[in-house]
Image (tube, rainbow, N blue to C red; front, top):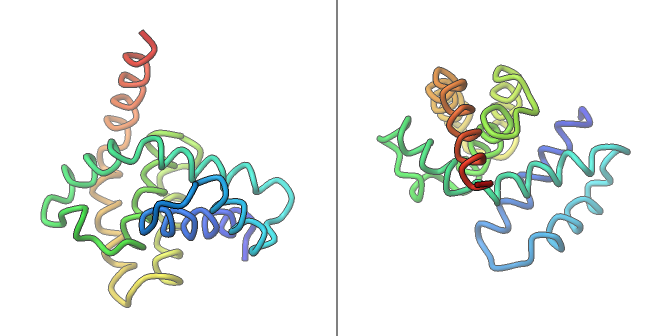
Length: 149
């Protein structure tokens, strides 16, 4: 498994657990990283994904709801919801991955961890969001600037 995909897998597992429990994020992530034996240099990427998604979860969920209104966020399977959040954070908020890379990696995670229909669902929702990637990135930048004032 590619190093960054392994980091995304760790992030997904941590976010899944955090979505279903009241566990402490740092402890959950440390436990998942240790179990996965992440390659050197990938701990920071996994940490960036987890804490980025946690920090921006409300915004990410608003965007998912806006561009995929037929799927209420709270009714999306927990694994699918967190895959969407990770990819969306990667290309629209954190700007750490190109849109196509984030979507491809999300589809691969959906194949590994989701239901049979999850890859197509994830690809469809992220495709809708990708059409608005620049708009979402600008909105995130403005919101961050507004918070700093």
